[in-house]
Length: 378
Image (cartoon, rainbow, N blue to C red; front, side, top):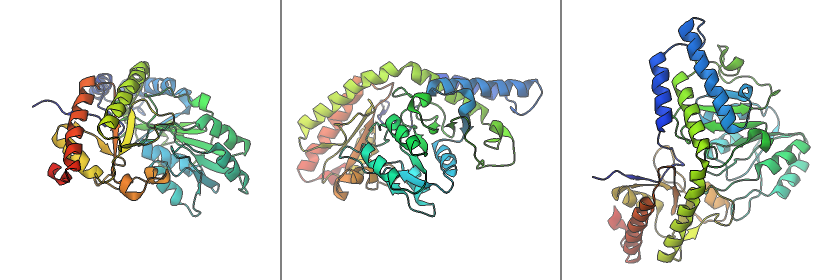
């Protein structure tokens, strides 16, 4: 049996060879980085070396990197710094950011987005001018479903002109496009390891120097008092190795744009009625999101899985069930179309023959659906 075709890099990327080696070495060495003996000092050295590597990959200083358990915790720590500020977000943020924003006492201010899902900078200006106090603004750098790249640098300038604090969720961006914390001008940036080929359960929040906060976890002085708990040395080492490898191979992702664009052209020839979301906006070079009304994402994902091809619905959920995408609904898709969306996300190991396999399998499914029997895929 041939190996599955994996086209779901935005969900999680395969662990890179460099990350596996770094993880194995850290596990073999052992040690608590808070211990003062030789083995402990060696473990501390691994953590600090990794901190410097992640900082280089993200365009930050090592002192600005706080290691924690992943993007979810990074976003939560960032939002804890909002204090009593008004929270301003776009309606196309990740579910985690939306949940954090709506869990507060006051509902968030939602920014307008265009038909591609790009935030309106003039709308942001107007929203901030209408507030009585400086705001906490969270705007993702790249969308996990459509791949849309937001104008974060310009947004940060507007936010700072109004005395606000700016956070960006850059989880999907690192390793796919150049990411420069300093150049973006944001105050806080969330990252995670498993999107760049590192281990799951490890991430970082990049914090501009001078920002003070109360840690979410207390009881230890780790991470310069910013996150209590013994550091996950092996995970951190794997994160750093993966981030370095990913940033060093950004040219691969530029080449993937040609594969992605070819995929969309071929699908459009098969099914002219297909809708490709956000194709008119700057996107991650590896991401395509499309839908065919009447052909549910659940059926498509199952049929492609049976054909040995791994993709996601427009919005994957922790329960494994398919829900209509709030991102697609925010940019004008009705519920039926949103429930039909597939996300294809390519990666460094994607080959042209993988695209050929996807096209062949999806074309067969489409032909069956046109004959009124999509349920045959089940």
